[in-house]
Length: 97
Image 1 (cartoon, rainbow, N blue to C red):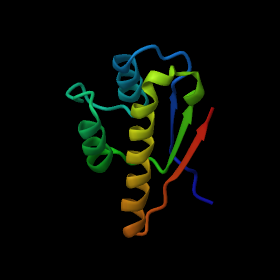
Image 2 (cartoon, one colour):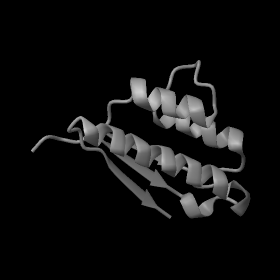
Image 3 (tube, one colour):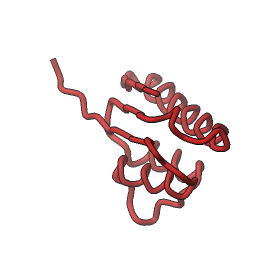
Image 4 (cartoon, helix red, strand yellow):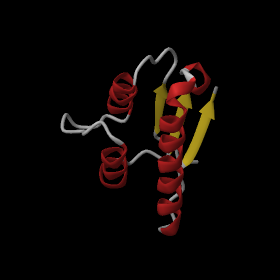
């Protein structure tokens, strides 16, 4: 069985949108030119990301004011999963509160 390359994004205790994007940059090993917005997140996932498993931790620890951003991030991850499936590539996305 092939071992899965996993990226773990831990959002526990994240206090701002800027910090959220910094944690994304670090977890996904994005380059310094990562634009820290959702378009840039999609662009780098689509072009630079090669893991086949994403684990997102601490979703419920963020303030309710970031709910839209978390929904957007999860929507983009699901879009990545659907995009990869078109080409026979499987990606597992696990989110834990």
